[in-house]
Image (cartoon, rainbow, N blue to C red):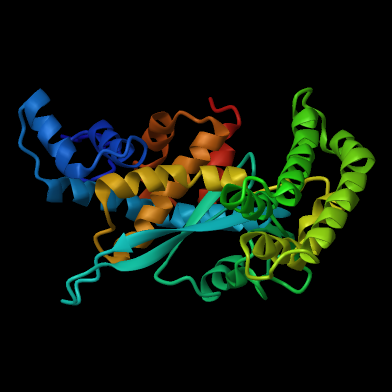
Length: 346
């Protein structure tokens, strides 16, 4: 007697199908449904009593399987030329008898229409970006956080974010609505964004957008710089407008990099928008269970945000990639990343 080998499973010898495991992970990190609610729903709708600990074991198994995939995505990302980056907080249970969680960070690195990779770190020091970026020598676009200084290779080009610069002037207007200097600067920065919006409407390529920027954004920047210089001479340095002026002039060279590099966006708004799912999740699943879970959760979020940007059906992708992933060679992982999967598959 001979039997055919069993098909690969996400959880070997598990009592549930791969689809149930995938639905659990998707419900938690796409729909922000914590595991204890999923346990109650399963019992109410289907009858079986599955504990939260069991569900958590499934999720952590998926995260463990995706860790090598996340590293393959990181290598693919670093082979590119442009990375916007940002970070957000997440609470972690430390199990050290202190009785409270530690604030950790999820750092996000990605491309505007491609891969996204999250990196879990217990702190906000420069060690996180330095370790992740290695000798990356392309364009790195961030806010003004000092954690991104002196990272990457010697040829790395650091670009700034106009949304962060604008935010300071908007705060000044909120405090003093009658401050015409701040109002004018906000309006001029809005005009700067309107130029790029005009380029997006007819789907101009990068070369055509660069022509539009050189013709209209370059002289507008001179006007903005002049208004900011005038405001600096008339406001207190510690005021809201004074702080906004200081921030913008400090990072002026970074903020004007987009005139030199056509692929640069004006802001990291897309990166910040990708953090909204984490913000919603924090209100539902509250915290990560341990520091060891942080890297696994980051790997899951990397896949989910990448599939969203690339418009890949996540359940189909996970169902095709996860079973047998533990036995897949490291060399083959590059063929299974979301960008590889986004190409037509048989």
